[in-house]
Image (cartoon, rainbow, N blue to C red):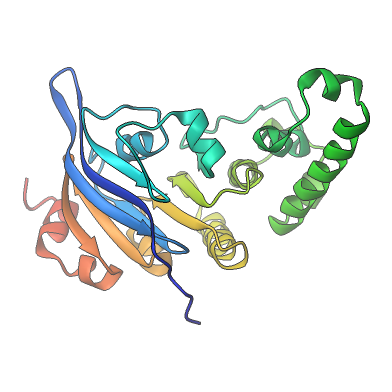
Length: 260
């Protein structure tokens, strides 16, 4: 099945980021095309999460710029990023453990809600109609992620793989154009990884969502990505189709540790 990969939606140019003299990222450039699954890989401490944090406005790089849908920013503001249609999942689950699956995913809708909190609290006309509309969307996501039996279950009671799925659902509730996934398979067993791969491919395919993915599991990355960028010690050492990257000597040595 061939999918149509569009124009560049996100362009990262010459990003450098330091913390107290330690360079986390050194002059990194790459782009992301509409509708692709773009992986960022590299050994521990390569700067992958820092890169994601620059894209979604958590960190402000000292140099470089990011262009999203033709608008260029020297630094992104995290609220503005979300409003523009970039959603993100986190390595360490930032879910509300005591809240149900449904309510957790509803929190992802907040940016899409137009009525103010006062109207929402009183459930006044427009707010109530809006809430019904949002609930419908959330139920669709729950169906899509095959977590219907757990709708009312507090998230903290679910196994880890399902919690990760709820986290993905919350990001999807934003209806993002670009979905940033920070190690979505971390800590999962083989079966959970296979499920998560399938959902990522489906999100990309059925919703047309562009996916930027950080992942340690090379096998997973090679299976599902259209293009891969490789970081090592904050520098870019590879960029291209999975097969190109896999056979790049610099990437092999970084991963197998022969270069260090």
